[in-house]
Image (tube, rainbow, N blue to C red):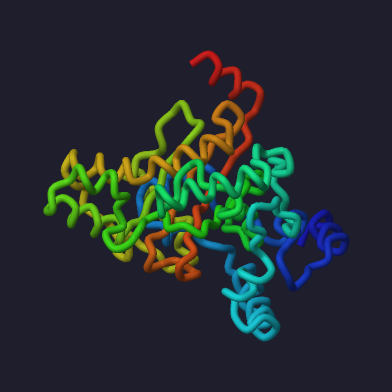
Length: 296
């Protein structure tokens, strides 16, 4: 161990609960770059996103204590961690976005919008009332660069509504055969997308070049879940299924200032039944990048 690292480890105590940013910097060196993160998400196998192994062991041990205190991780989320309609004040990894000035509506407007929303839609949209949403930071982040914010947008409304997982207005335009194919795709893969980038995400064909970073988790090309590309009409329906999430992300993470990649797990992989959530990875742009965006 170098003298500098030895000094840092003495100055930064190693805790047992959710890590601080300094702990992540000193003890849990990120394994994946921003480009690799975008590649993994664009590939469509969300199981490629991994947490540092040592941090994961710490998470599991902490989780045992949480279950003993709250009864289950679900009860911990519902009764403590989620802050419906309010900014996240519990995170040790706070976002640069101050939700206290995010355009939340007044309580009266919330009630009115909530009533209107419940009468017209029973699924998540970009204008879902704040009282039905809790935006928090991931307390146990994946092995990504420290400057990347990982937010979780929890919602009381389904993002992929049962039973078909297809938003009704989209389903109405599809033949029964196509509905079945799109529903199967959403059930297998969920949704993902990108905002704020001038350049397209890395092609999935580049994944073999990044497999070395995944070797610690026993992931090989042979173990990957690969969904064959569908017809043009099928791919279009999948893309449209993510439009409401895309619009919400663009509203909160202004594209001039932020580049994001996001994903939604299919219901079968939801950690809390009946509560969907969106994973949003956000990178703050440099002044040069914002100037490039303005000039595009």
